[in-house]
Length: 302
Image 1 (cartoon, rainbow, N blue to C red):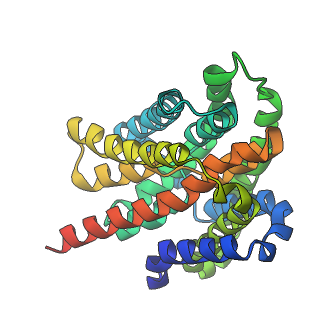
Image 2 (cartoon, rainbow, N blue to C red; image 1 turned 90 degrees about the vertical axis):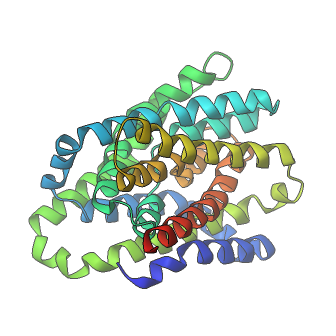
């Protein structure tokens, strides 16, 4: 991977700051969030081959445990934290959406920096992304559908278009045009990184006014949510006897969410206020993830 990937968290923070102080630079790109997410899913697909999914069988314990943790710890913790911090309905929706989506592609970058198993990370992200197409609307409905109208089938349809279709197109293109894709394979993580940073910037710009009057409780909830995911994502597989490299990999897969997708769903199906949790998570998980990756990188060097 290109060394510039190490600057990913720094660029995310810098661009977030630019978007916060100059929102007009990015607000006009609101309609680009979904196409950018589709593009990121496409780039993920372009890095995968059908044979890569054999890792699901070869590493079924790690993948299975990661999926269980991903779709239990994150959504349930989000729901409980909202009640613990007595957050309003908009924040509840946003937090649950963040918890119910799949792992984010940024986890692959940070896994690389932390000396984790990058191949396994990419496979786990792809699998959780596919599973999330169904699990995200189901979990959202299960946790908050009793008092909030959840458009479960519309969400399912949107996720199929935003996530499933471009991912499968990418895998197909990589299979048919393997020799061509191979030439740009090394640049795909950087391209995806730039798209993620741009999405974060747009999200921050769109919510700039709300971020100015932010309730510190939602900040505390988002930070706690992410840290619980990273912590349990590491120590649970450790208790199951998995090796250090895989434990680091699962930690990032569980603790780092596709918050851009959560924001897109919040804006499309609920309210802009529901997107605040995803906005904060987008910024924070890159900070916490980069700190953890730096720590593990130094630990591996010793």
